[in-house]
Image (cartoon, rainbow over all chains, first blue to last red; front, side):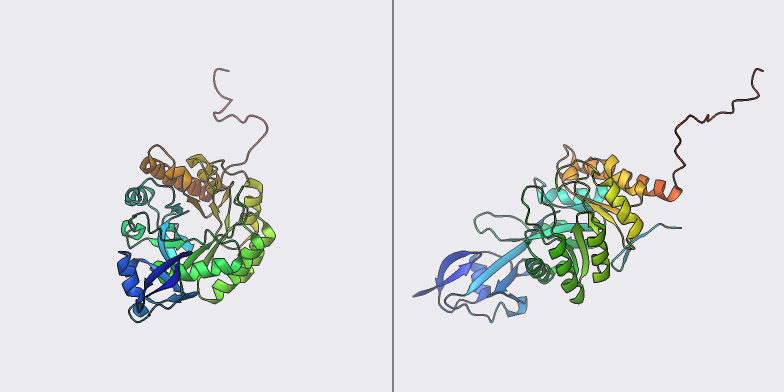
Length: 68
Length: 255
């Protein structure tokens, strides 16, 4: 059974007991190069390993890009 | 004596800040930084697009350069504050260019929301550089709020139209006791030079360099223009006059 979370505004089904670090790895993202907002709070990188995702969680995953 | 540009707690030689948007490839950026001599570089924060593979822009920015993330995308103060904190968490340090825009046609900044965001972020220890329309009263409120500089626009963002706000920027230079950084609309080196001759402390340029046929050469041209304008300002331009005034002696020859 999977759970449904919202990532960058889109619903996504993931496996139960997925940690944020697992989720980033599944997307081939380097955790040092992204910033994660977890249910509206900024999540420190040290906590990626011990944060487990639950049904209806909301993730924003952002990165630095070019800008003026 | 060195003429250094003091901003935040930094003293810098370069008075040209460059943006990193609109380049066809981020790999061009190291050359632009080197040709421009810029010591402050703007970047932005965006949602990751899982469908397109892109590299990391920070890999292309040398460590000695001060990052200046902007809050582009923010439509009000609370969104700007949120983006500033995310940018800090992303490793950009504590400098932030506040950009609060809800007008999609001219991309003109919202002065009221900008002031609110500045107040909050200064309290949180950020070095705050707000992008504004050149409005004296907004600039005064920002000075009171603890902004590190004000960044009035020369013309709408990306328009390359030059220093259309000349008279209002001149008033800010005269009245505001903070660095004045002309940001947006400067399309050619002569525009930047003009702003510096008037006494602006620095210029921020993105589109005019990124959109040039040869961005590296244009970055170098802007750096020279900013430097020339600064030196002219320091030199103190002579008086203008309505009539001619001969440069060579008019007497004592072939009487």
